[in-house]
Length: 167
Image (cartoon, rainbow, N blue to C red; front, side):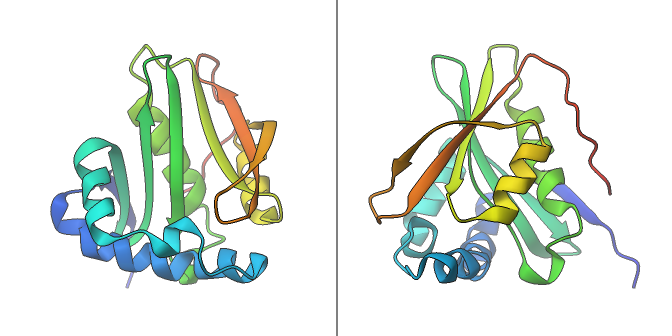
């Protein structure tokens, strides 16, 4: 087969594939917390389409199939917020999440971005491992509206990356 995964900007035509992938990929998170009302599982297609129009949304493609996605935006204070990073379960553990994370950081790095911020569930060990390896450190926590305890992580956007992303 030998197809390689490419990362590009999402288009409006990708909305349904992203929506289905997000629902599939976040099942594991819901299982960890015993909570199937987490935001990625309850987000509407219309809400996702609004994010596509407003935010930086990247997709990883294997041929025509969307197998990974991530969203980001930068606020007026220079904080690049990264959200909803997910990879199709059959491709997890092969570095695609790290590639998507690097790609969204690069997409948000416009000279005014001073830091990147994201969050994940306190029990989401594989996510925490990925983010720590990518240079993120915990700066706080909060409880999401769905009751999940979150860890807030940040990384300085002005320092060179100290992690390698494998293909």
